[in-house]
Structure formats: structure tokens, C-alpha cells
Amino acid sequence: MWIWFGLAIAALIGELASGTFYLLLVALGLAAGGVAAWMDVGLQWQLIVCAAVGLIGLGILRATRVLKKREVDDRRNADVHLDIGQTVNVESWSEARQARVWYRGAHWQAELASDQAPEPGLYQIAAIRGTRLILSRKV
Image 1 (tube, rainbow, N blue to C red):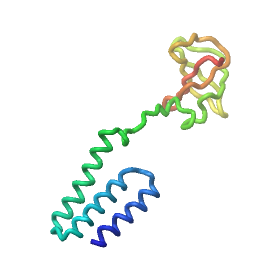
Image 2 (spheres, rainbow, N blue to C red):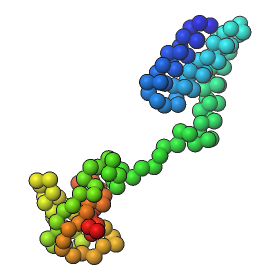
Image 3 (cartoon, rainbow, N blue to C red):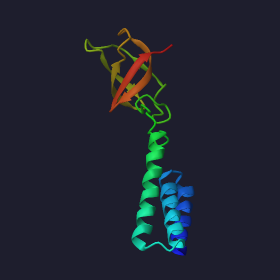
Image 4 (cartoon, rainbow, N blue to C red):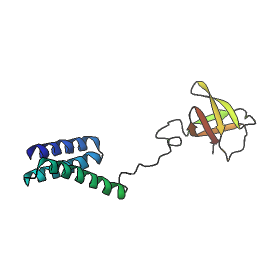
């Protein structure tokens, strides 16, 4: 019984260190296994109770969408790419709405955002797609 509770406490400590809900579910399952051991249930039922409580908890968290991954478009997120929002100068655009720009000491391939007119001037980096800068007119 004490082994179950010791493992549950270790999982809780791991949960506090990682910040996910998964180890919390493991800790709850282990604690349920400890309760089953305290009630003098056989080892196979202790394991079944431990797994069932963990899986039921996972089902509840998924049903309430607590574990849903937040959809973040990292190509447009300035927290991911510090280049987003920076200014570049475009001297000319090709017919394919592409240009080569000088940025951070190197030439970069740039592409014009779909709602923009291809005119020379200052542009702002709106997104990054691979190694290509997506530019929009600087306001």
C-alpha cells in the first residue's frame, strides 16, 4: 500500500516540475491503486484500478478539452520569430511577386503577401515560410 502512495507522491512532484496534467492522472491512478491495496484487494485488481482511474481521468480531460493543443501559427508569431515586424527595403519585384532583399547581412528571398500591390519601398515582415520572408506594405 505504501509503495503505491510513495509512487503517487513521486508523480505529483514530477507534475509540479513539468506542469502537465498527464502526471497528475498517473498520480491519481497510483493513489487509487493504493486505496485498493488498503482494502486488501489482489494485485491484479490494484493494477486494474490504477489503470482505469488514469484512463477515465484522461477521458474526462479530453472531453473537457483541457488537453487540447492551442493552435498557434508559428510562421506569423513574433514570439517565435523575432524577425516578424522588422522592416526591409524592396528595390523591385519580379512578375512572380518575388524579390531578393538585404536583411541581417544577407540576401533573402521575399514574397509579397497576397493582398498587396508590387511596388518598391519599405515593407514589413509579416510571416516566415521556410527561408522565405512574406512581406506586407509598411504602414
